[in-house]
Length: 456
Image 1 (tube, rainbow, N blue to C red):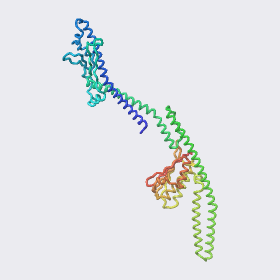
Image 2 (image 1 turned 30 degrees about the vertical axis):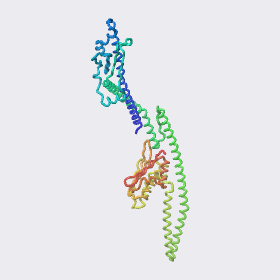
Image 3 (image 1 turned 120 degrees about the vertical axis):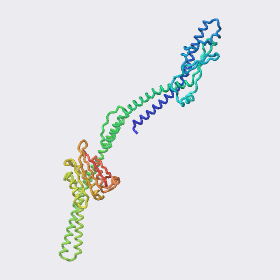
Image 4 (image 1 turned 120 degrees about the horizontal axis):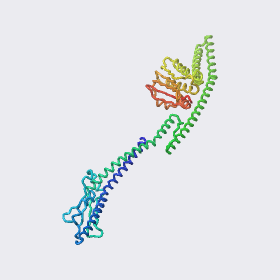
């Protein structure tokens, strides 16, 4: 899962938790706001009755204070306006058959669901009544008792929650959207770092990264740049060591070729001459045909050894690209395999691009790769058709592509893991040139592809 999506998911979780906390707080505040409204209603009505009490006391001074209140005048429209919705107020001591005076509770809001109406009182408890004296200085004036309506309290709480939730949802959506855009913008440079790492995986170690504003990303970018530099140095050192190893091996091959030519070649020539002399002498004397037959067998064996020696010397000597050029050496290689036997499979040679100016280690590497692949396909497989394609790709990445494909079967995974001298040698040459090698299954056989940069 992408990091941006993970951060956005966590942000949405935090927003949901905050929204839930806001809902709980809104429920508690709305439910308890009825208590505040009850106390305020009791206080307002008590103050109004206190003014009424002292007015009656001044106008009817002939009466005793106990006879002044309660009076019918307190149940008026002005008193109703002082009572909050969902609150009922009564005066004590009460007159017979007197009912509490209640505020308007109809139309307070939508009817809440049953689960809300049952859960809220269970967790938040019931409302208490509020008692206020009409006059603190006259205890006989009576008291005002305000009692909240439980159903009205739940209605008010539900309506308040709906209003708060609407605003909270809009704010949560806006916060989530803006925060997601901010997170995506902050993590956008990570894609640049990933692209740089992918280029490093393809061998482009010197990948310049832009300067990041974030300190963490700047540290990662610096570490990636330093890693690329070290990888490039290590690759250059490894390539230099491999090239040196190949040079030493080439010198040893040349020395071995000289030794074989000078020692074995001369001795084989001498053996052949002695065998021919013996055969001629015995034939002239007509004495022992068995000795002549043995001399001819020695001559045949010597010819076979000399042919094998010539073939070995061809492989040990300087490669043909240094003498004929890459294109001519490839044509000569394919022709030599075609001419060895009529039963050999069909070899198709496809040369693309300008190969005339290619020389040096790149040409030798291409030739050795083609030589090894053809040898393996012809000697170790039952191929009926082999395709050899050498292509020069120009442009930003000037390189040579060698592609050999056959239909002779074979296990690509086993061949790729092989530690034979031939594959090991071409792997070393390609690594020294800074190229790449891949061995994959093809239609009925194997496909070997190698890339050799010409800048190497």
